[in-house]
Amino acid sequence: MRGLLILAMALLLSGAGNRPRLTEEEKERMEDRKEMVEEQVRQRGVTDLRVLKAMETVPRELFVPRQMRNMAFMDGPLPIGGGQTISQPYVVGLMTQLAEVGPEDKVLEIGTGSGYQAAVLAELTDKVFSIEILPELAAQAANRLKSLGYDQIRLRTGDGYAGWPEEAPFDAILVTAAPESVPQPLTDQLAEGGVLVMPLGPRAGYQELICIRKKEGKLERETITSVSFVPLIRGKEDPRLSDRT
Image (cartoon, rainbow, N blue to C red; front, top):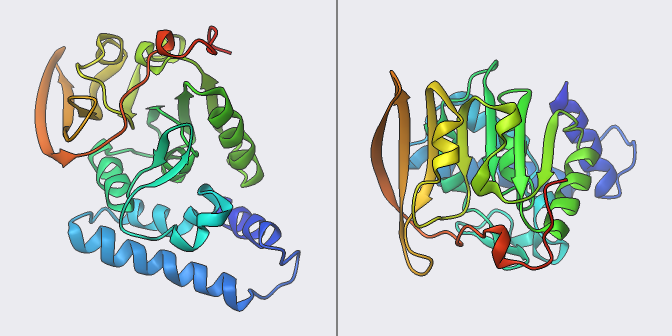
């Protein structure tokens, strides 16, 4: 049902209104998404069919600045404002696959950004919680996700380092910006058997994408690959921020 709603909204946002047929441009966008998923994601080792289908369904082109929509499917990140980026498609697919999100799982995302990763997660479960520290990006993402029918995603503006304790525990936590150390609140909020996927490392240069699993109360950490993410911003770094809303 959500896929049909997304398609309808994509038609509306592209100016197609309620016409039953896709324009040539809209058909091209759909083909671009399928090609992106096949060549950039599946062929690099992301094989979870639910993840691949989710990335084919979510209109990535609507999660980038309008002037960059022709670049939405490129093999790399794109700026979205506020010094933040929308992650490379492969990285989105890899992190989502590592999170092993099931239909009944409760997921927390740190770093909403444009809302793209949250939308992909919402294709896998109806229990998605996402925190964005920059108010402008949070407001834009909220409007965008609502317009596309993702009403089940709960958003919060605030310091993601602290997580969302009132809603814990979470079966999966994804962090889409890099801290220099693993946030203790996030491991505390991880459910037994849950997984935390995040980049970890210095603010400049490359970091390591790690996967932390909680088994019998203990944390098992695995390094996956090298990545390059923007740093995880703390509340004290931005004087515009107030407490969570």
